[in-house]
Length: 308
Image 1: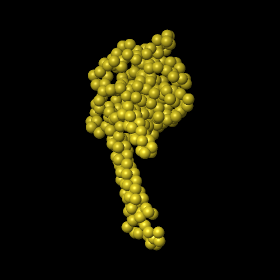
Image 2 (image 1 turned 135 degrees about the horizontal axis):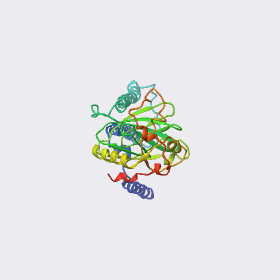
Image 3 (image 1 turned 90 degrees about the vertical axis):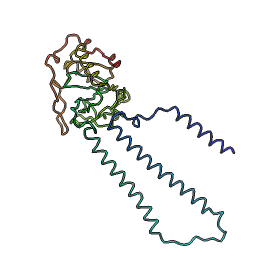
Image 4 (image 1 turned 135 degrees about the vertical axis):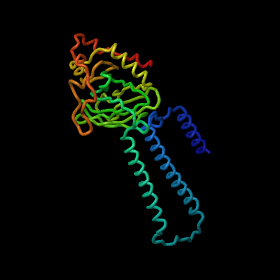
């Protein structure tokens, strides 16, 4: 009786805790790449759950049907060398499961590495996402602006991120838009994403890179393209130019808030040459790279744009 109430109490406690949990962000996709990965996770979890239930069901069946109390005291089990059918089932079913999951994984890998489905005919927004200890720099070469620790993106348009690092290896990850990918110091990796709906998402470095790793995060805001264009226009009218001197200050280890600049660092400090990229998708005005006499003004923060 005591065991029964203990078990019921444990089940009730777990149920109460789960009802207060928010859904996992990886299972709440807001883009085609993340949706594909979420479906793969659910499929894999479902297969594993089915296997667990079958195994435990067979275990309970064997324990009950063949328990010692049902046999006579002089019972001796027959000597069996083996059973071809049972052995084929025990080996064949795991092989089929592994083969199926491998096929799904390889197929999904090709899908998420390509331009998001449904966006093949649209011009991508190219964003150079570079990391330094412990911050993220987002360069928009076509728009000629740069942000620190926050990212604005348009919905219903493919996104092409060029990833690299000015420090240790990091991993760029926006769970609700897609999987993570490494940013390294000696090459540029390309990550294709897209946001189907407006909203605010969390982004972070998913690879341990020192004591400041836990705060190496950034905010992502997806909005309709006309609102994104208005934001770009506002930045060009209000933000201060990014100078080479100021960018070198930003590369120093430490944590910063959100910042916005006109111009990008791609002109005076281009990304590394590498197999997956390294060329500049756009140009920046030469005026935006002139040194500004007031270094404090150049780090003006533009956090109020989140009200779009």
